[in-house]
Image 1 (cartoon, rainbow, N blue to C red):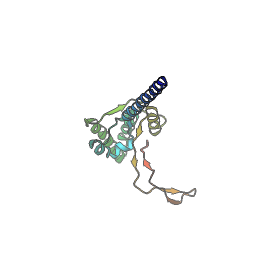
Image 2 (tube, rainbow, N blue to C red; image 1 turned 30 degrees about the vertical axis):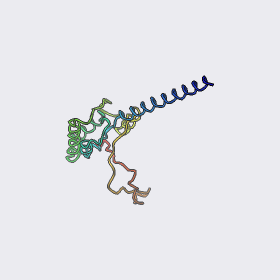
Image 3 (spheres, rainbow, N blue to C red; image 1 turned 90 degrees about the horizontal axis):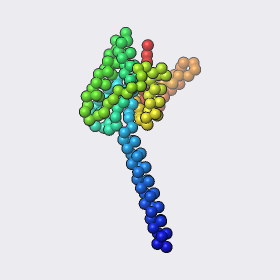
Image 4 (tube, rainbow, N blue to C red; image 1 turned 90 degrees about the vertical axis):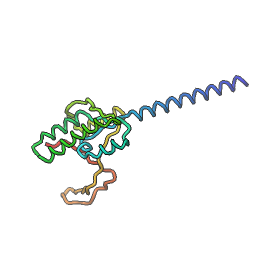
Length: 166
């Protein structure tokens, strides 16, 4: 009988140890998982106030392809696009100067052949990270096959993402 009790207690101790170690691994992975920053977030610029407040505790990874897209737009002939892209590049410099935040230019290649958005999705999946986005505030309309407006698209789940524009 005593041997049975000892075996049961050892089994309980082993299971408790296993569950504790497993929970610690998951917690550590979640804390270190990066947040990949999209072009639209850098152009928008509000991420600086969020970062300075200390709300972002995970490292920010700005993929090199996002920086390349901003540089491409900064060389654009359109003055408004050029100005917004330069603002995005300034935001990167500002984020890197915040001492309480880890900001890293992530080496994923200068140009994303599959598109920056798809590259961000694959990077987030590969590294167990998240992607930043900017909530859409304007009314988005849905058009029918004839080109006429059919109604507004619900904004609750829409996020704006900057795409390369020639």
